[in-house]
Image (tube, rainbow, N blue to C red; front, side, top):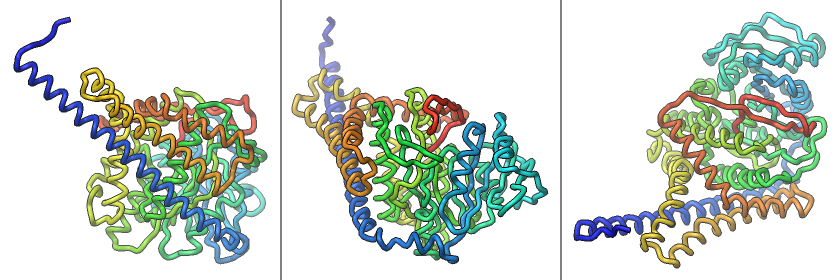
Length: 495
């Protein structure tokens, strides 16, 4: 081994030693801050859950289900190569409990017979129909179909392929009602899902412009006739870890942000919007891979610039279910795509970050997403390199290493366990103790290998967004809800 000697080398090694020490200290402070912020959001969500449970007997769902004053809703379902399950999905959607609504299915240039499956199931007939042009679209609408008999609650449009966002814009143009609900064709909704997510509009019709609902994982659940009748934790470890992620980020995190008046994301799998507000901002952005979150931020921006008093809220009830990836390769595509979408959105709206003109959105929510969401994989992987390097160089002692492990991983495990406990207290979805224990196992497993893998995938997604590489959704392999052996391929999802 050759040992470098001399004053220049000693100075260089000393500077490197100091740099690694400072970087390691920054990493440990970062992990302390991010885990504490998650814990604060969870505690805020817990307070909101307590109030929701107290108000539950007086929620007024029965009155809303029969009241002529409940605003009607157009449910928009974009579909691309969904022939295997589209008919069942639409049937389940038509059975939702709501006084007045329609289902608008937009077939985005499917090549697998999606339209044929709908035509056979609902006896559709092609009609002459002038599609409004409230929002510009790229894919030409080639035909519109309605059921031959009975009340017209279903509209099916066929268009040239233009992507999910473009299909949603066509659906918004076709929508007859003042509220538009955007759902994925493979989502499963509880029977009162529309009533729950429309409740904020009934309570505060002048100010609420959008509301989002909880998306749960249907992996392992018992599904009958398009409804989840028994919630279960997935039997596989990968599914259990994702359940914990969804609880912490998609239920508790978004509930906390909603309470702070700073909700930035409404899941594309289930969200309700005022049509006039969506049209005013130009609809969905077909060039953004995270079109759902981008729309919400654009609504915030528009309302703030107009000086409007408005609300965008989150409904903390398990009302929509989706299937999570069960294979690492598929999960990698999903997380890479999600982080690319986040990168594109924050770049597009970078002038809002730290801008007091946009209130809590500009000064709190967007900076949080930049520091603790966008940059999280970079810091995570940097910590995995710098801390061991610091140990080898003597810049990090055993006490510091122990503190790093406690703050970065043990603290994260505690936050995950609190998430499971809060969800179980508030909703008690899982009736078996083995499901609760399965969730706790997922909490531990998330921090041993899984976090590091997702950090790498997310970092690659950020790089894709920065260099503006061609958008590739990849195939989403699904086992299906009612036939465990059935496998379907589709163009991907975003929750």
